[in-house]
Every structure is written in C-alpha cells, then in structure tokens.
Length: 165
Image: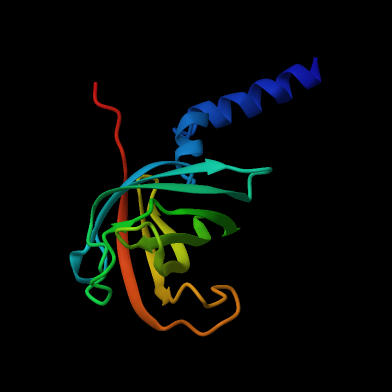
C-alpha cells in the first residue's frame, strides 16, 4: 500500500507540475529547426536533429533553402552540399555541434569544405542560439587537424518548427 501511495505522489507531482513528458522532451536539441541568416545573411535552412546511440549524442541533417555556394570567395563553386553533422550534450540545454558541407564546381569537384562548430544553447524549449565559427578549408587540407584557410565567428538563432493546428 505504501508503494502505491509513493507512486501516486510521484505521478501527481510530475503531471501536476505543468511539465509533462512531451514538453520535457521538447527542451532538447532533438527536433526540426529553422534558421535564416548566418554570415552576411548567406544561409537559410531547415535542420533535423535526431537522437543517437544514447541521450547525449546525435546527428544533424540540414537542408539548404537558400545558400550562396561561392561564399563570396570561390567563384567556381556552383553548389554546396547539404550539411551533415553531430551534436553532443554538455549539460542541460547546452550542446557542442559540428557539421560539414562541400562546395562543388560545375564538374562536381570539391572546391572547399565548410566546417562550422560551436555551442548550441537552448534559450527556450523552442529556440537555441548557435555561437561558434564557420571554418573554410581547401579540399587538400585535413579538416580535423589543419588550420582553416579562413574562419568567421557566428551567433545565430534557430527556431523549432511548430505544429500548425
């Protein structure tokens, strides 16, 4: 009987607190996000952040809506691949993120590699700020160990895509 009372009290506290399970799950990076802006307002995209092997890691899959493939520096680039990346939870509401995309010329050859990295900080359950750096590498460089050709600091806001009723 005591166990049932304790269980009832715990369930009542969770449900009565106004923080149900669905809302609690929304307070992670997992979800579908929208962004417009970036360095010189060059980028607009949607982002799907999915869970990985456990609750502290996952994948990032981007879809470009608007992008300038030249980045203002590579006139031979005609296409920028959709980025893919990873996230890793550092603490509640804070995630390290890294993603990679490739600038391609008209023949499909890599002209440069774009590798943003930084911290995504949840400002609400439906928004996060990405504070980091967009690094650019030549295709001959090791993007994990070499110094980038150039870097641009960024501070970008992302909004969770809402369900329309």
